[in-house]
Image 1: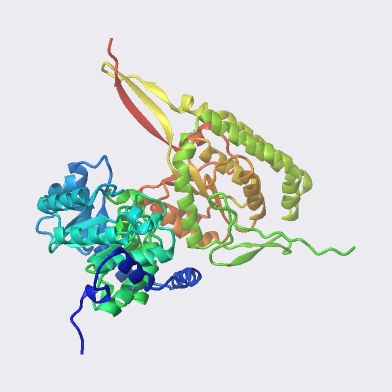
Image 2 (image 1 turned 135 degrees about the vertical axis):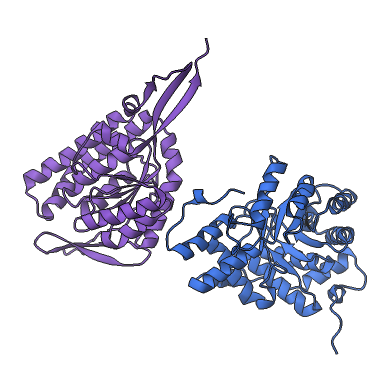
Length: 317
Length: 282
């Protein structure tokens, strides 16, 4: 007999700090040495020619083309949206990216710019990037961003609460924000650069998935280290184990610090080897990046022409 | 008493580091009478790609130094070269030259560096100009570095030819990817050890040893190379480099003149002229 997929199946009946602690105590630990070795081994996979081209186009389709700067303007966001819709002007063989990712203020601009193209609008929320405010304010911000027309919400967890062991606070916050999102996709940023160990990353992943995150995401991009392949593998394993335990599929988004096509392909190899083809779509995997797109495009052009490309010949976004 | 030889590995010079070729290949460098002097790295197209990346990364910083500072650094290269005068004489003699000619060649290479060092903060005065225009404007032209230059180094004289083609490229703020002479790579490799200890920022000069024939097409077609000095290339290679250059309008230098030319005009050949209009006011 198979039960309907349910996140609650892994959770204790009564959710308290103590019961969450014992839930997270039971999710197992991470072998750091083997994680690094596995990542190094997968990095030696050789993806060439047609397979490489397919991987690069997949990477474009999985991209959340991002700008999260204090100096962002409506003009910059419109330019970014144009780039997301048609990465190489005049070349319809290059697909659109999955989404553009912007600050709340610029969501209406982005939504107007991508309307009708299939490109989605993701917005960071919950007092990104620090998240240092109370839950009611964060929920209010999310509700506001939803009303502005975002399709996806990228929230940050309260790392302070997580690290001091107040799992209930983190859990409740994610739940309330998921409720505020309604049907919209919620990505939960763990900010792994601020967590102490891979064990913490695994626990935070499980907590975020159990609380209702549709995606788990490594980083804000504002803290170094941001995404690494090792931390991504740890999170992908957590997603696999969560899917086994609950039947619920959760997506993954490494973000920050992924700048080269070669790196992107290595992430895709890890994804395919850990979760398989069921996750190899923009619905279940995203890259949060800005400069990555042009490097991928340059590599596609290099495959097409056999000539190393000039970065100046690719539009800025 | 018996001591094992400590043999040197002759490697590439990319971004201020001395890597082996990523391909793991090498080839024998021989003297004129066929004796194997050393096995040196046989660079691949990927090494060339890395070298261009390093040169591109270094270019803005190098051009951003004052001319005076670049002159100091070129002079420093000359100082270090002077210090290893005998090493170079030995290598040039081993490759088949007479000791007297080898000594003269090394001295001439040092002198060329000192000469170009002096031009570092002066060539702009020669190549720049206040142009007369019919209107109430100052019209000012000034030379600016072109960017990343590929250099096909001449086979002979191996050291002087290399220095005489390299110095006018970097003095104005260009960075360089040099294809060292295929038959005589040893002086070029030793020269990189001098560059590494002369305050030349990493990536300003990148040296690839290997098959010129193999690397020329990749250099010719590389979109991020702004110009190529073809002085050391064979006629067929020059044609290939010009064809590649025509694809994206690379500046091609070195079709005329001699390997050991030295002139402020040559510095100008590796620059671009920027002209600005400025209202005169009263």
